[in-house]
Length: 369
Image (tube, rainbow, N blue to C red; front, side, top):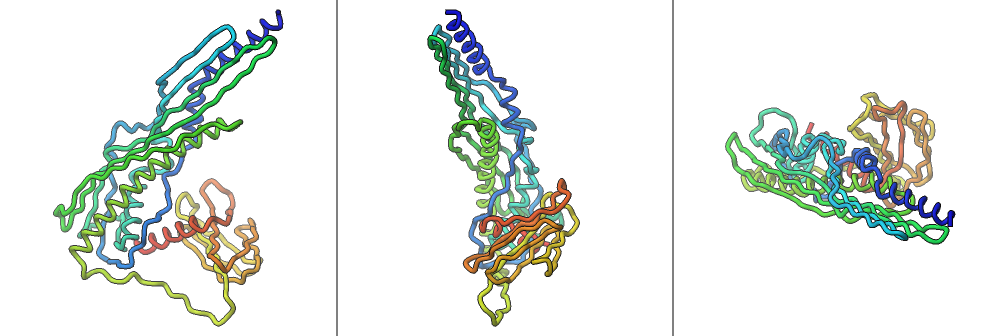
């Protein structure tokens, strides 16, 4: 009898602790890892381009409901105490803030509007403040991302033991954004409109031993979904501006230049592209070597194309080396990274889609400068 009472007491304590899991701790783990808004540009690249300059002004973020820090508000709570059963259900609403996003929102939107316009054909879409004939201004008057976070479970008391279950889940979340944009031509307004996007995430369910990952992944999912709403709005704006320029100044458009490489009289060769991004990189150059001999350098926002056979070779950056096995079927992309927090450079093979995205970014930025 004493053992049974001890078991029930122990189970009751455990159930009480689980049902009262610190909301502060959950909130800290949800909001503790800022996520990136960065996304892959997958819109079609226009074959017709113009050199007519477009200035993209720094957007204004006017939504005062989007706070600096996240919120974690309890919305529902229920505990079912009984002699042989103890159950609980607690639901919170998690809302991200500016501190959950790595980038400055205004800067991010400005740069990606310029990138999208460049892909649409406006080669001189720029974020410089110089006075130009065409000027695009954007106001971000509404944005946010939030979703429910649930913790629930139960304890069933047996004769000399107990059975317990506890799960956590999150979502589905919701992200939204609304942009007001205006295009002026020689100081006069020629285009003004509002564009908005609302997206719903998939629900997240905890798997064994991954409750911390569930929390960080949910925060990341909300930020990524907010980024997707930005993408939809940005693509709409870029398309509307390009359509105006094509209609008003059709004679300024010409075929997009094609970079042609000199054909070599040799066996088919594989191509390897090594690049450095520009964000959060140290300014100094990185020295790279191929098989301990061929040497070249990379600065931030630069890339190097190598023509090689399909045989494996060793690529080293400041003493950090990896073996690369090229393929004739597709280009191999390698990212070289020397961030501000690193003592030495690192190199890593990345997926084809990721590599193409960042090399295109470098080309777009180079074209604008």
